[in-house]
Length: 444
Image: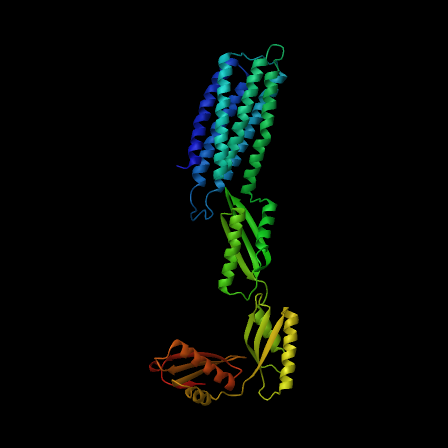
């Protein structure tokens, strides 16, 4: 059994004991204010019972009907208990006003009555402290509502003792007047707890909390803008969800790292139990923007090998395909036009344009012949994959199975150098395999 449940059950038992003590005192003294205390304590029994039931329900785990859990029952029952207290307090004031209008008679004061009332005050002080600290540590609204109520009960009981001791035939109106004053002092605290509970139920959240969440998210340098931030409380739990825009060129792994980074900050700084971050691209990717800009340049037939680099990805290298008959002056003019346009439109510090060309057809036989001249090559297979503005060559090379990894890497570079010479406008993928696994051939 949870600590909060033990405290709640103990509070119910104490409330029953206090009701009995105050009822005996009311019978002894005939005091209206003591009778009002009995009514108030009966209300305490009810609210304590509601608190215990609320703890039992709100601690249940999420299920199909309540995917967020049952913690809002805590706020619902906290509101209910506060409303009941407000009604009881209103009744006490009503009884006291009626007594003042009529002819109030002074209470009968005995040592036994004073002792019993002081005993209930001491009991309520201890109970209030236990409920307040337990409710705060476990985030139970209803417990803190009760703690406030019992704290005022303890102070009000001391006022009742004072009233009984000074009441006489001369000031018979002191008893009901004191009841009005004591009860009026309790009402603001009860109303405040009702407001807290109602705010939780209506998903009202402190605007400063949302502002803090937005500030924490914006501190993440990968987040370019914040589209939406929402938060709600379910019992003691804080839930936050947000939609943020990030650079669309980030990889899936980088995007997930951004999500984890933001969720971790919100959980640690705001003590949020559940954080959900959704990402959306802040606009078209820089790669697609580069492609669109370059392909609209006169004389350009294609673009490939777009590579952003540098600490802030502020530099760019790319290959541009032009007609093979174009001279250096014309190609240089196109390269300068592209570099200037990309720097201005994308805010880049440096752009390096590499000019490639591609002929009308690929001489597969020449590629195979040149590669097979390399040392340790047994066979070559060439496959080309064409798209609207790109040519990719897939080269598989059968080599001596006993080559070291270092020798294999050198062979790959030699093959890539041949391809760059013969088909500079094409992307190439080179794979070195043991010569016993493939037969040579070409698919163009």
